[in-house]
Amino acid sequence: MDGKKFKMGWMIVAFDLPVLTKEQRKVASKFRKYLLNDGYMMIQFSFYARPTVTFSRMKTHLRRLKYNLPPEGSVRSIYVTQAQWERAYIIHGSPNKEVDAERMPKQLEFW
Image 1: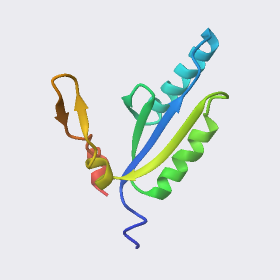
Image 2: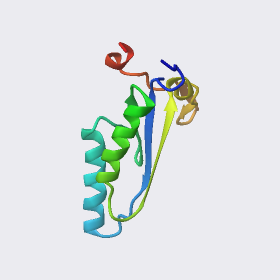
Image 3: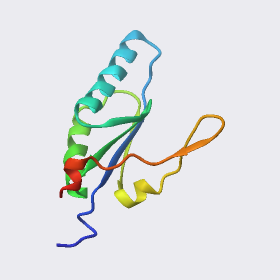
């Protein structure tokens, strides 16, 4: 097995959706709920991440994401390895407080 192809990582979804009308807000809310129900966690309001066991599993989630895309707006997805994810700098508030990146869920660490 090629270790480079089978690293655990995170599928990141970032999006900008129009929310000017009531219908647009409803569509954006439905998309956010889809992401949460599909195992993503909200990192920031339009930035969600989902742990994945492999890059090929990410492709499966990408197909489902494409099926649930809103008709308007911009959605971007990227895969990062756990090692890349852990190198993130997360800074909160003032005075600045740096915190650690989210850890891979325990059931995925089993693999």
